[in-house]
Amino acid sequence: MPDHFDERETQSPEARERDLFARLPDFIARAMAEAPGWARHLDGIDPSAISSREALASLPMLRKGALKTLQEADPPFGGFAAIRPGGATRIFMSPGPIFEPQGEGPDPWNGARALFAAGFRPGDVVHNAFAYTLTPGGFILDCGARALGCAVVPAGIGNTEMQVEAMAHIRPTGYTGTPDFLKILLDKAEEAGRDVSSLSRALVSGAALPPSLRAELGERGVGVLQAYAIAEIGVIAYETEALDGMVVEEEAIVEIVRPGTGEPVAEGEVGEVVVTRMNAAYPMIRLATGDLSAVLPGQSPCGRTNMRIRGWMGRADQTTKVKGMFVHPEQVAEALRGLGDAPGRARLVVTRENEQDVMTLKVEAEAGDGSLAGRLADCLQTATKLRGRVEIVAPGSLPNDGKVIEDARPLD
Image 1 (cartoon, rainbow, N blue to C red):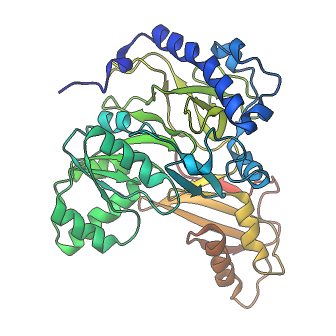
Image 2 (cartoon, rainbow, N blue to C red; image 1 turned 90 degrees about the vertical axis):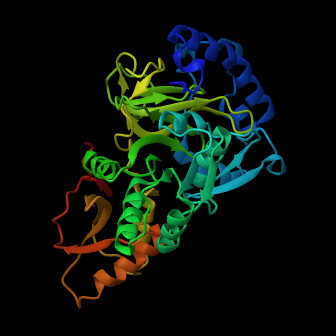
């Protein structure tokens, strides 16, 4: 069995840089010619001059958070797709909402390489528990697994009992989905007396994987590695058996920049992840993801030579991912407005309990009839599509620092 997906993974860093930046000027020129949004965004730019990292860093960033407004003004894709809606193979609606087209090709999200690094091989059966409804999550690794030569069980999310029944009957060798849902499935199988021991590997994303959860899943026979992916790009980076950071995907150009400036930071310094991907259907040039990470020095012990990053280290803004879904400050405000007479200052605190994400909305209010917390919990679920706790606290007790969402989960 080969150790690497292809020879690109072990080429010299200098050869990789030459290849990527030799292709980049023509890619930018095509994006500006075929997508009016890019023509507007990069107006005045000479694509032929963008042939190095230094030149790329001079371009304006496109903020992921701005796509919603841009798409509302110019539906469906804000002018940033190089294909018409009818030329896409699928059109997705991610939380925001933000709309994304899927182009042609067997692996449009570059998922196969990450799956290979996680131990998946042709002939494996993959139980895919990412969402298939409207969002691209399920398709990112579904396409990658099939491109790799695997069969896919399109399980989606929810229906835990049915998923366990399917796993016990089909006997998949691998799992893709969020790590906490994998634990839920294993717990449910144990409770129901169903044998799902065929699972030996997993590629997870979309939620935190603390060392304690990785260790527990490993003790239960499932080796777990992570991928870092977003809807607009697909897979950006992935873990390998070396468990020493995340290797950047071969088709992605990753920059780590100082939040708010777009200027690349020094190696090892934490900053915002900015990604360029030469996708002919949906070009992305300096997409500012809002995620925080840092570049690791040196190369991976696994033999792959591309840049490594530390993985997801939080958000540059207050948007936070909870159970695989983004929660925005605007949604917290929406939950408070749902009461009509809004209470005082509020803060949504995200923590971990029993290897699960938990969110608690702390709201300043005078003691009332006791129904406020229940009504707020309903409003919070309506606004975020996630269940959360509500804690009523004394007026003036929350910090006056402008923070609406606090991610209090441990990074390690």
